[in-house]
Length: 162
Image (cartoon, rainbow, N blue to C red; front, side, top):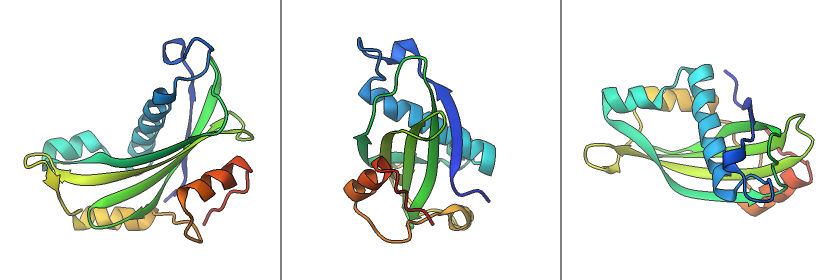
């Protein structure tokens, strides 16, 4: 199974500030939408089906983002995502937004998702089936790094990947 997923999207007018830069908050929207589409396409992982059928879901518990270069109006960007780690109740996802040919990093995001029971709104352990999927697709960094060091490495295009 692929561990680093990738897709492209065009930056739209309504998502930009008056300087034709992608608005800071919209980076998150583009990245989360890309990840959702990527995992559905590559892993047949439908978060809405899981919510409907199992009453489970994920909420963002923490996010860290570094804006490395502006994304511009009408620019096509490449968004790469991967699962860096998981626990019984959490996921840590990394996303990197690049220009179209992946020569200029635009942003890096680490987002921690908490798995919850939608009825109780409380943390809930991942099922054995989910744990098996995560075990197959997890792509940890070869050495633990704090977010700031990872963002700096990506900015310098010295990617550290497994």
